Length: 82
Image 1 (cartoon, rainbow, N blue to C red):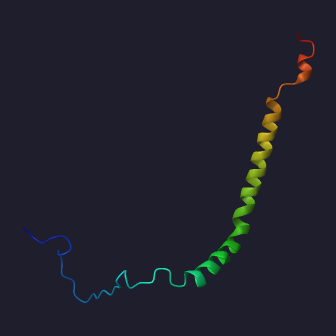
Image 2 (image 1 turned 45 degrees about the vertical axis):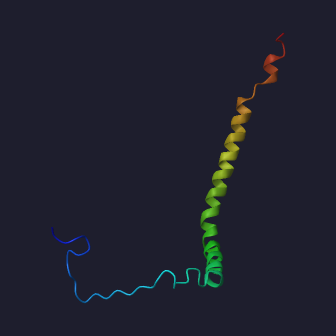
Image 3 (image 1 turned 90 degrees about the horizontal axis):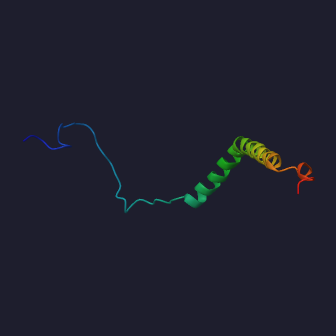
């Protein structure tokens, strides 16, 4: 009933090379190259990412504090109540 999937066409001139997963070194150079590269990338982006978050937090904190003050009852309004 026809060819199966993967055998639909015969292509000539393509050579595939691959390594067995058991022969690859997945973490080769992770400590010597990966960790210093991570710190370098962090340092290059920290001044671009942190200031907007700090400004947004300061605005949020100020708004929440002011909202808490406005929601408080004024004790002077209830001096004559008994």
